[in-house]
Structures are given as C-alpha cells and as structure tokens.
Image (tube, protein in one colour):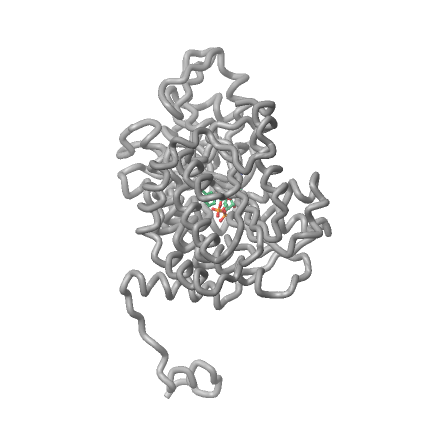
Length: 428
Ligand SMILES: NC(=O)c1ccc[n+]([C@@H]2O[C@H](COP(=O)([O-])OP(=O)(O)OC[C@H]3O[C@@H](n4cnc5c(N)ncnc54)[C@H](O)[C@@H]3O)[C@@H](O)[C@H]2O)c1
C-alpha cells in the first residue's frame, strides 16, 4: 500500500487494510470488553452524562481490541474520535476495520513504512482534535514540529507510556511544550500493573508465539530493571529460565540482585545469553560489540517503546545474509557462521508478535485515560506542563477494579485516623 494510494482517498474518513475484516473485529472487541469491567462502568456514566458532546478527540494509540473498548467509551460520551496507530507493526487490522464501521476516523494498518505511519498521524490531526491521546508522543511531536496550526484548537492531552512522558518532560523543560499533558503512565494504577504484569506476561507471549522455544533452563537476559523489566524477569523466572539483569541504575541493579537475579554488564551477559529482551527506553543497548560475542542461535527481542534499543543497523552490517524463518522471526547469518535471530523487527514484541497487554490490565490503564480526558474536557485550559494524574482518579480506578474483582478491604477507624494524623503519641 503506497502513500500515493493513500492520498487518493485522503478526503475519506478512514484508511484501513480491509474493511471486510470488520465482523471479526467486532467479536474481538466484544471479547476484550467482557474483561474490562472498570472501563465499562465508566462508559455507562459517559453514556448518561455525555461529557464529550461536540468534542473531537485525536488518539495515537496501538489499535488493539482494548483500545477499541476505550474508543467506544468515548463515543458513548458523545465524542468524535480520530485514531491512528502508535507503532507501524501493532495495529490489529480486524479491529481497525470494526472501528471504521462505527464511524471512527481510523487511519491504521499493520506493517506500515515510516512514511505511511506519519501520514496516518497527520490524517488524525486533520480532524482538528481538541484533546489528544498519545502512546509515545508522536502525535504531540508532529503537532509541535509540523502542524502547529492545530495547536490553537487543543485544550490538552494525555500520554500513555514511559518513553512518551520522558519526551514530553524534555519538551516542557526547554519551553517547547504548548499545551497541558496528563502523564497517565505515571499513575500508580497504571504502571504498577500495566508496565509490570501487562508487559511481563505479554512479552513472554510475544516471544513464545514468534519462536515456540522452551524457556526452562535458558539464560534469559533482561536489559533494564524498571517496571517493565521487573515484570518480564518475574515471568521468565516463573517459566524456569535463569534470569540475568543488566542495568545502569545502581538502585535497580541492587534490587534485581536482592530479588535473586544475576546482575552483570551487557558485555558479559552477551557471551552467555540465549534470549535477550531490551526494555530500557534507551538507544543501542544491544549493539555491534555485544552481537560479536553472542552464542550461535541467540534470540533478540525488544519490549521498549521504540525500535532503537537493539541496534538493527549493526546487525544488518554484521550479517552476510538474512532469511525470514516464520512470522516475526528473522535469521541473520554472520561471517563466522553464527546465526542471530531478531524478533518482530526489533519493535515491541508483545504487540508485534502477540496482542499486547491482556484486557484486564488495559482496563485500568484505559480507565485512567478515560477519566483524564474527561478531566481535561471539564476543566479550564491548564498551563502547558506535564501533570500527574489527579490522586482521586488514580484511587477511583483502583477501587473500581477491586469492586470488579469482588475484593473488599478495611477502612480506617476514627481512632486510627486520629492516630495517623497526630505526632504527640509515642510508646505507651
Ligand atoms: N511493550 C509494552 O507494551 C510497553 C508497556 C509499557 C512501557 N513500555 C516501554 O518500555 C520501556 C521501559 O518502560 P519502564 O516503564 O520499564 O521504564 P523505567 O524507567 O521504569 O525502566 C527503564 C529502566 O531501564 C534502565 N536503563 C536505561 N538505560 C539502560 C541501559 N543502557 N542498560 C540497562 N538498563 C538501562 C533504567 O535505569 C531503568 O531502570 C519504555 O520505552 C516504555 O515506554 C512498553
């Protein structure tokens, strides 16, 4: 599919791979929705209150069945939604088709070139959103770099992931940021669950779907022991792998060591690892000098936001030939006869080779998105800064999830409230 073909239908309301996939997409969305009780409860209220009446929302999110449940909640609240994917390889084409059928201005298909990817981002901007939702800050970035005429209409935005929040904070610091952003990623009810349990499970899922290898007994190297890295390490350990952590932060490295993992520099891990997974948000974490030391058959995957963590240019340069073995599994043959295997073109493996996070986790992340977008819609325009998710929203999401899981917790007694608020009382 070329950009020229895309331009031919520029005046149309959507561009997806194949609209005939819609019926399968509707079933996928229905399945996800059954596992997203918090978002459904919010949707019910939106339906009654219509907080987004006459508003256009512009979203650059992975176009998955869970994102569709979020979009449906916005539609129920009276919004018009323009949607593009937040990664060239993460769109679920059946879901995109189903959304197009529901009059969402969706511009997304799986397997885009970089040019096609940004073409879709611009089509979402064409719909003149007044609130933006991002996963990786590409929508905000394009608006600020190239489509500044869109700024006057925008009241605020939200950001879903760590890498996006980092980029937005850098924009704020240099004075480049022109509208308020709520960092959904930084809500407790997001990163403690989504980044840890979501990425943990779905990264393993992606690796297994791409390779079907046995994890038990393998040296499984996780680069970065942040929220995602902790989850991946925990799950790989649970599958019987021998987990090795590489880090640059002494505290995280110490935590990994005390959680029972081997910690070492990547240059050392490179020689013994069977599987490498990067999840740092950083660039060239696995590069030429490491690839030169790796064992024959080593597998490389990334679960960080951008495809820059494994230096693919280095891999291409070291290789004498490349073959696609099966979906999302490319073999690179090196001069000395060793073979290295790259999964999902180095893009986030849980979305490239699997389906992203399970719906139960996205239920909380997207409940935060829904409530933060409502917050932006209802309040006056805020100064252009990166804001934390309001504490009430974070707590509401956790409470609704506990309710949905039928888990009850204790409440502070009057005596306890008083005790916790005073400093005079010591040992009795
Ligand atoms: N795959 C997904 O679905 C998914 C979900 C959530 C977040 N993400 C992305 O995953 C990445 C990590 O997110 P996070 O929330 O875990 O971030 P985090 O900040 O909690 O953790 C990143 C860790 O990487 C470490 N690090 C940085 N450079 C390193 C290097 N060169 N070598 C080793 N370690 C290094 C940091 O010290 C930090 O501990 C981000 O790009 C984020 O956007 C992906």
